[in-house]
Image 1: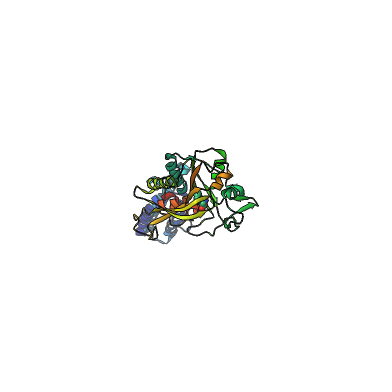
Image 2 (image 1 turned 120 degrees about the horizontal axis):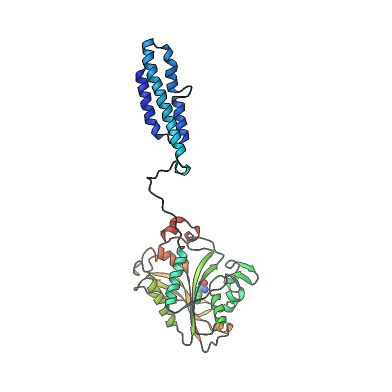
Length: 336
Ligand code: PHE
């Protein structure tokens, strides 16, 4: 019996320090002191013992009961003395870093492009996302039956009102507003009724450039894009032009940068071609000048347009355009 009492005392002494909330303390009380508790059980059994044993065991059992009772009372006392918000707090745990905000990788890319072109003397110009057919197509020399006007590509709001499909209408708005020389870039959101996949989104971003003055040439276009390529991807990157067609430029080109990742030898990023297609460009078509009342005999100009997502994907090695609008924190944090 004495042995059992000693074991119970040890068990209680071991369990008490861990009982730091009301529930754990109550559990101790039930285990030792309640009607069916272990100490209570011993006290009840005293009657069956021989007289001399009863005296000794009774003393030890009562001492244990008192010990348990005062231990529990003390623990409850301590619990009450603690401010509510310090309970359960382990102040030895390392702290948690606070969340901090950051610019979206697309915005970071856009700011980088803006800075590069501002250094070269381009101003910023903006236009509305909800655009008139006149600006998005007509003034840009798209014939009425041009396939780009097709419902499959364009989100129409009304017959002549649409979500702009490119940033080129800002060329027209800018030339209506300013006389040459004009040198602007126009970053912004564009919309196309596309099937969404790893490289296509229905909403994406473009950056347009426009430079109009006397004697602006295709060489100026190529030099400007080459300077841009070098500031973005490094001094060894070159520019390639290949013939293309846009209604609002003549001649028109698609332009590519030599792959900065493999130095043009061919790799996964450039799909082994050594070149990465960046955008479309060309010399402003005289028809566009006529639409904005510029004298096509006196002025020439170049324009280019590129996708900001595409650049951001290259800069941050992002493999899928959908990552930009899914806002997974792992991507947003990785590009801070
Ligand atoms: N607006 C064209 C597009 O979205 C790109 C472009 C811009 C081409 C300027 C030539 C000049 O595809």
